[in-house]
Image (cartoon, rainbow, N blue to C red; front, side, top):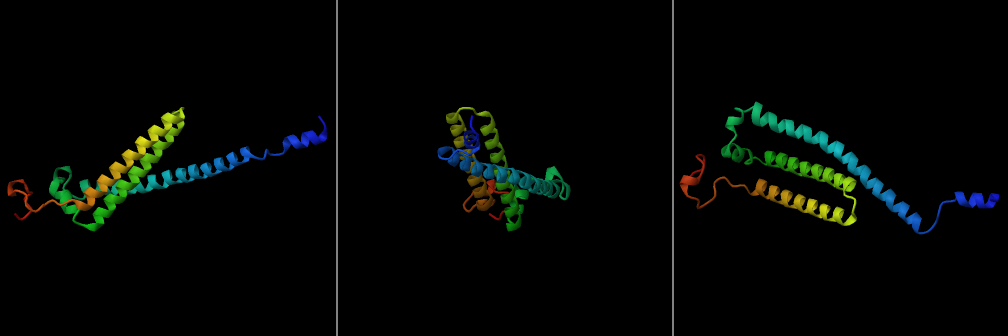
Length: 156
């Protein structure tokens, strides 16, 4: 091999391969941000969960005091609605991101990987939408309900 041929062999390949490398770098950035998000959301979730457990179990009257009325009273406050909403969204984003990573690691066929991710994202959307609706539209004393079905704190 001549010196010119050796130098040409060391040059980066131009053309379609180079665009693939760019795409891979962009995906690498997404994976980096995903990794950082998992660490940050994990720490924030720990703080939210332990606050939730402390307020519900330790500061109150324990698990025996948690009933429909307790949840209704708690969700009457916009602060607790917001805290529970953030906890729901973070937990779902954190779990979905983790499952996405597992699917990418273990599903070898592209078609299977695509369908698993579609099912995962659909489940994410359903749980987040329904959970958000429950938190913000929860009414413990609906109008027109029979008095014997209403909790004791509702005025009939």
